[in-house]
Image (cartoon, rainbow, N blue to C red):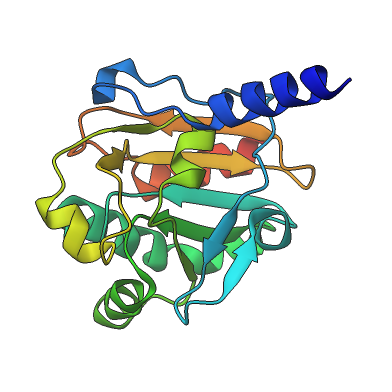
Length: 190
């Protein structure tokens, strides 16, 4: 029995340890799969489980960091349509490898009202299957030394109350992002 438990633990640990060699080689969670429960940190550094964050219908944005101009543009785009998203019954949650103090800077600079969370160690990005290897210099600074050398491929998931993925947009070309008007059209049709 002890060997079976160790084997199962090893398989679960391995399944969360996905860091692809390139953005094109990721194996993301797909429509119909559930978002796993992992720890994240809020802008104040408090650890919160994703089960507690994603407890209702959610537009989940996984982005590279507040240092990325394409990410900031996408975050601002989501802020512009936040009221419409909320009116459709969804919350917006954005997650990046940035440490909490850098999340707070992004939140203030972009005047964001929705919630930002830190995945500095990459546990969540790996569990989603969207992490890929990347050189550390900039990542080390913005994750406060916790980033093991990865970036997430920019991703948008729409999840239901059961944490199941109903829609996804993932593009390894980080400059190409899901536009707000297309997201609203998707939400209206789900």
